[in-house]
Length: 241
Image 1 (cartoon, rainbow, N blue to C red):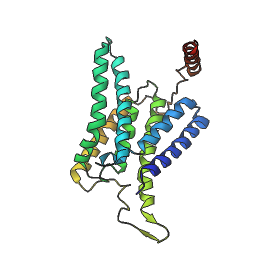
Image 2 (image 1 turned 90 degrees about the vertical axis):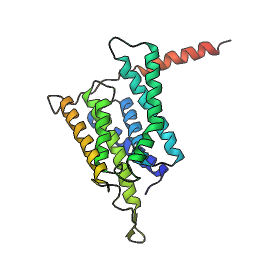
Image 3 (image 1 turned 180 degrees about the vertical axis):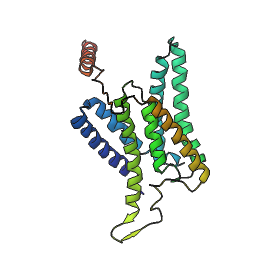
Image 4 (image 1 turned 60 degrees about the vertical axis):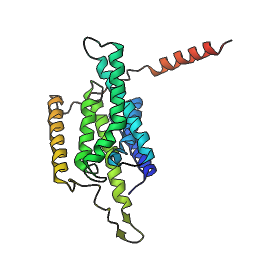
């Protein structure tokens, strides 16, 4: 199986290739492409969340916690009436703690390493979750990010299978076939994953636009250059004696 660095490198390469294709063929703004590359890179480690060891994965769950906190902050801010700051604060703190400290513990208890987490239905689940809950009103952008996460997840499975083959010795080790699979050794875990996949698929169908070919993409909503100039002006004013 691949190691931490190999998974990150492979996923980031595929993410860059995917974003470049979206830029040239779909007209996706490069800034959204960088986000897609980031999501692809991070999701390249998602299958190993069921591992109870690894210093690198602890840092990875910290990054996931920050992303979850940002998503929760955005969602709470859209409520009507707008909640008070203290509600925002507690929602962010709780979501970070749950993802940072609870996600891996729950997954490691529900399944063993290289169990259902290393499978195609789990890959689809993470992609659908991204599509459903990515904080954007644009269908095309949510599809773009959902596919990015699925590509990153699948890159992990593919690299594990590739590393299970010894081309020099023309043989495969016992881990071959345990990454890209449709079910886990446990029938109950497999049933639960397919139930979740079915539910998320139903939710995606309900949210999908009436026109199945619709792929709306936003222009860049964030005036990066303007913000950068304002930050530089503030820094210059602070630096002046």
